[in-house]
Length: 375
Image (cartoon, rainbow, N blue to C red; front, side):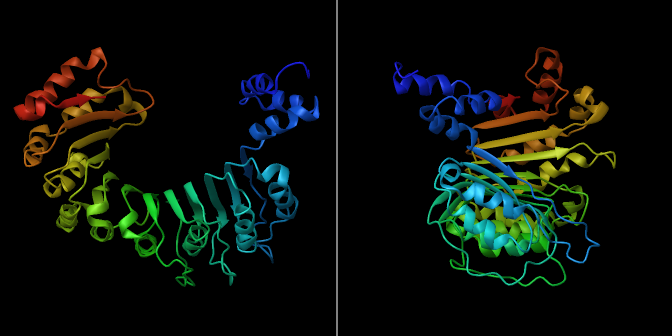
């Protein structure tokens, strides 16, 4: 094997980067093959620790953490980890943070899964001083969010879902008090958690928000979203929203959207509802307050189950004339996109939906007809 240049051997191994069994076999061939195979084998790691049931005397004991931690932080593995998904519990938050800062190539971190109560007293978090592209905190008490934010100088995308605050929740802060996050994505969180998140973020750094308000428990009031928009203001470039039909009575609270003077695009996704014909009015909740310079508006209708085969019936239920009238004040609008989100449905651009596209266009003002795109 030594007769081949190292560059060619690396190219051969790179072709097997998605075949873990072949990579493991190659890593045993010779020492020269080990670094390249390790780079692919340890590029993405998942460490899900077992946790005892809640009714045990020590419900947060994680017996397997002591086994996995030295492996992940070892020099051979740590040098290659770019994506890490790891379970945390109150007794291991600080230890997981100590491992994270030892991973020089880390670009994506997901933590959570079992932290259903406030964490105990935590030491000051270590800092890597690096940027990370993606940080996800899920199914955890919200007090650990600033702890993991403090590990990095800045965050590209922060995703928060299924996080909560309990009766013993005490807001905590570690330097810096405001964290630079470019994009925020949240879903299935309460208004209390969103307000806490808003207090943690550096407003001048936030460029995009993806907000899911369409959830079955404790929906976020539009007041909370409006406060976030008001804080971020002119720094926001993109907004994606899945509105909740239960928030329609607080439409006036979204006047803060007008303060997002540099907003370039907005995506509004409405889920068809059996609760009545007003399910699509989530589109209208935002349109009266769009800044005039908004360039791209995208409407998406989510379909599930048997309705995925009936997009024409669902889309014709929408008053596109009313939507078109609300959009006419956006003098800078360059593209209007209309689409369907469903695993069972072809895009609206498909030939079989030609009649549906024409029916929608007829209801729109002539200026919008010329910039409408279906996907």
